[in-house]
Image (cartoon, rainbow, N blue to C red; front, side, top):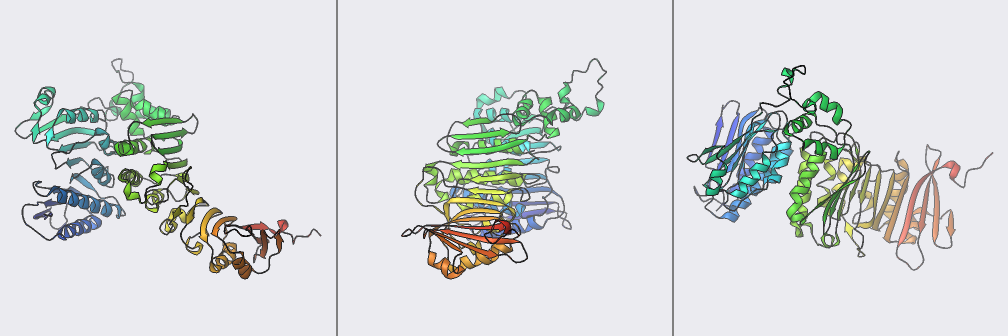
Length: 554
């Protein structure tokens, strides 16, 4: 039995400032397509809303129906909400946001696409009895909040000791929170004694953990009197002083400083220092490891206990925490995998891997400005995973794209580039390295004329491909060298297309020179193919006239 929304409430009909979609599987039986109508309404509203909203709420009302159907529809609603928020040119302004989710990452993705300076409260509804939450999942939501502090409410079935422990962990992130409220249906009796000092209302079935900001150095900065002998404020808690200090720190020092005290954490979060990360490497193997290389100091390695399925959220949360305020250009971003993952037929065969890349994509999208990376290295043959990363990097800074097969795999591996080659990042990059994966498309469709240097492997080159390279590469203002490994090569096609070579070496190497119009340069073409072998190696290069055999010193 699918959802049906039985009412929509809007306030201020002339200029709506509030909308609430309510879903209830018990009100009426409707055709399965009806949830699509709901999604279309949500998308139309979110895409086109201009004015600031006081409330945006997308929730289930009852959960006594078909849980599998409800889970499917919640996923569809969350997905359509995220897609419509991503399509906006400006972030939607919402004061109070309420969403039913299956995973905390769903509300994090949505909240990161809202205007965080406007957002005042978030209600996360976990509608099913077996749902629990790790505190780590909430960290990107909390730490992404700006000067406007957040009231966080978690609606769930049972308030247990496990839930209490996770809430206590969240309470260490106080600089961005006003309160944490838990709405429950039942409560563990052992919890009641442990929450005696909180605002507990058994009638309303709520527990509120309020946070006192009376000694917040940011709010009290204007009242600070350093000559007052009674002032016990740590000097690092003064944002102006922290700014001058943190500008000389790198990622591990910044994170260590945040752990000293609540006041210092608030000061650091207010200043938002650049961590100056030089290189960030994910190792998604039979172990999980992240290597961070800094500009000045040595590398830092973090190893995670557990599988990618268990730790995907934690690994991505740490990436968000470490890189959120990175303004300088990172030299290298790399993601490596193990042989077991590589041998899967489809990326959907590993839900944890797919989840990891989507979480990483959400973090990149949520940034106030695209992450600047000079070198991107991905060890994968799945284009869809690459599309979770490549389009969300700063196209003005990405110069090198490396896509590789992992070591130890001897079988032939192919790759599609039809989507990747259309991205702005691809069209502005300068170097492409992809030698151990075979491209499954014509070189004419690869959009290669923007690259200075290319090294790739293709299945074959038709006479049309050869003609395209011969005529188009010299017209590129940036082209220098293109090296192509051809799996099924025909020297006869090159001879028929390019004509008689300038030189043939041992019946293996064929060399041509073609004069480039309006430039004192030549297109140098060299094909190497050993007789009776299918494979060939081809190189196009732009060479100065002085380096050609036709140059004569007068």
